[in-house]
Length: 562
Image (cartoon, rainbow, N blue to C red; front, side):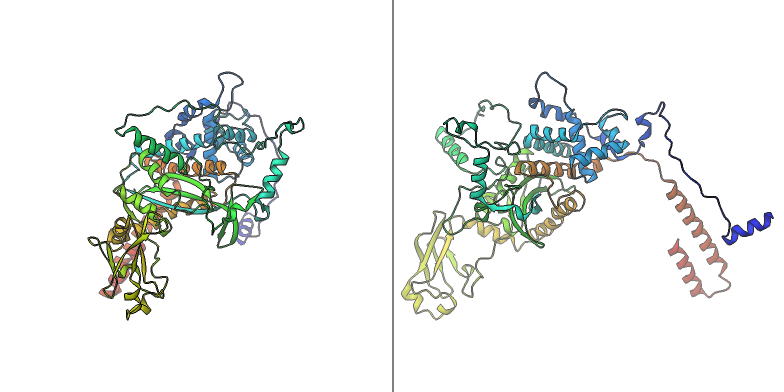
């Protein structure tokens, strides 16, 4: 009978009684969360290598001296990091995730029976902190990366990527209708009393770009400089007149308009996210933003500058502000700045070259749009201040162009109309004209870079230095679409995402420490060694059975398999 049972098992015909698992939970006694989280867990390594106590200093001014104790700011930023690493898209989902995960509870410092913060508290804390605290958190991570030797500082790369907004195209309405509706909806009650009504912004639309600004800053302390009071006054007026893209959080400068072009965002606005603007992608038209990165040229790919701007803002406009802030904030002395052709405007190139930084940026080809001679085929004589055309005729200075930054040169009409090369030069009866920038020397210097190997290497390096960071953010960290709305909120989200990407490099630099070797790997290594020994033995045993060439071939196969 015992033999028949064995035979049935071998043939797969043995039967077994179906089991039933009853649900029963015994109360935990003398169980510590410290014992339930593995010693080599990721959050243990993160807590051991990153001390977040510095955030308390950043947010000290946003809290009162007395009252009910609030959520620890360290816990808030730990939750933000959990959201980044786990790919979570909402605070509600984040707190549900934290309630289920023992490792997250341990990382936050909350015991099993201790209630976690409510998800709505995280939103109110973000409203209190504003962009300034998130930017200081990002810069604190960059500072630690710099102390760890991850920031090289000799090369800077800049690029931008399109990110969809958390709003649909169906929410786009005429701007004048939306503004009139908001002014009527949020009018004060003083209008009923015969007073002048003033529009009041809703709670989700802070009046300033930084909601945590509760009191006015004191007067700035002027540092001693070697410039005269007249120069100081002139520079102050220029700084007040210019549009500071970082201070304005990338908002469009609507004071600059032209008579022949009107922005679509000036006429239409989304009622869901008024700061988002329409952008064209491969999938069609969407509302969105552009995330700008300034990346260090070192091997760690550290992000040293971040800005989120509406998609209506051209990529080249915030470039200089981002470069200068990264340069002076981190005390960098870059020898080159690299970007694609979208950044190749005259203002950007001249500003970079004037600071003795090589602008490895392609200039847009504006000369080969027609079949006529390009300006590169005209020789400029600096001593005589004339251009010489391919036929040997001179183009003399005529008058300034549309601005004082450009000069117009014109050939004599009589010489130009009788020239045998006129069909290849111009159709004008007034003579061929050329415009020369007053900073043409800088532009010629940038054009000369295009033939050097360093220039070509920098452009190749840009494509593998910045774009993979965008791909990493979109593939793993929810960068394809913002989860928040309004410009200051998406800047908070962008800064936090960039800080997380830098933190991953910092953790890799500081190392994981010594971890136990997996038993499965040791077992696989043991089997591989045994198989290699067996194959080698079989190869030697077959010497008498095969020829010399066959023996060498069989031995080679065994070694390759080993």
